[in-house]
Length: 361
Image (cartoon, rainbow, N blue to C red; front, side):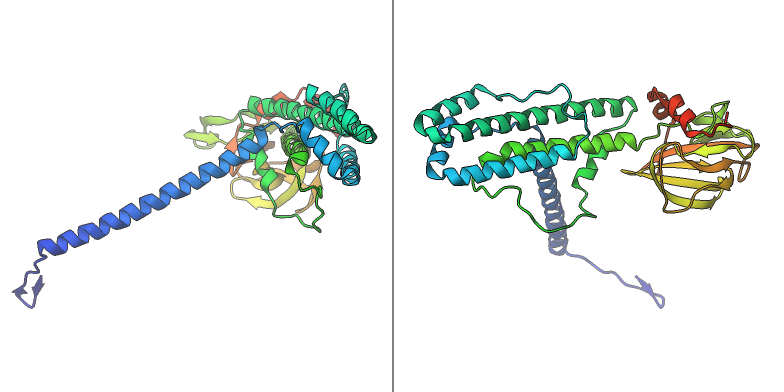
């Protein structure tokens, strides 16, 4: 160290250096242990969730049910009644064609064994045993149906090049829920309701995936006369330099209608740099669609819109060389190619035509 023309030296002994190195090593080891613990906890939590989704409900043995009937036949009757009420509520909230092609039957040979043993050991409970067998077979059949529909929805989502996992995030979203606690079942035997819990998970998964599909772009946002610029890299129309185009450009006359590509909530109406007059629609699960260069707005922030609803008019505002609609699809604020969404729906033209006024092209 140089100070006022004097040079001084500071010596650090080997012992001090060893202690300093040891301290750094301890801190590093502590950080690594903490990181490993967080990784293990995350893995365990994810494993438990997957196990709940994939695990088939265990079938209650005939011997267990005989014992339950003998101990409290009145309690079993009440439990079955509550189950039936729950089933009716579930079915009432599902689409009308949910049971199309499905039949109710015994789910396994164990159900037949249960009926036989209960009938011989406790004849007065035979009717209850048959009711329970029918209920459980119905629940398992409905679970298989929900799983099948969920797989179909997943396949459609993957065809669009997307991960179905981001749509399933809505299952765990509890940011806007509430109400009094009403237990699904009063039974203390968890095995009795395991298949019902499995059904609830399957239905939630199916509904989340199908809800996500309906919120994806499915209607052409403008008349498909000419796409003047596609998604990806291109020569900039102003300076000719290499540039990335984050959407599709639909060429059209000033004032031609612009349609919402899917149902959602209008999250922005106004001007953005380069886009000019712009509307954005939030479709949930991190997906938005953006409509730019408008000459007029036909919607307001916060409004719920349907697929095919008019939200504006084609214009030439912002950084634009001529009247057209610039259309973007963004997921978690990252642009993705809109073309697969629009091409994946066989009814795009039909829905678009139905949404247009009679004078539209």
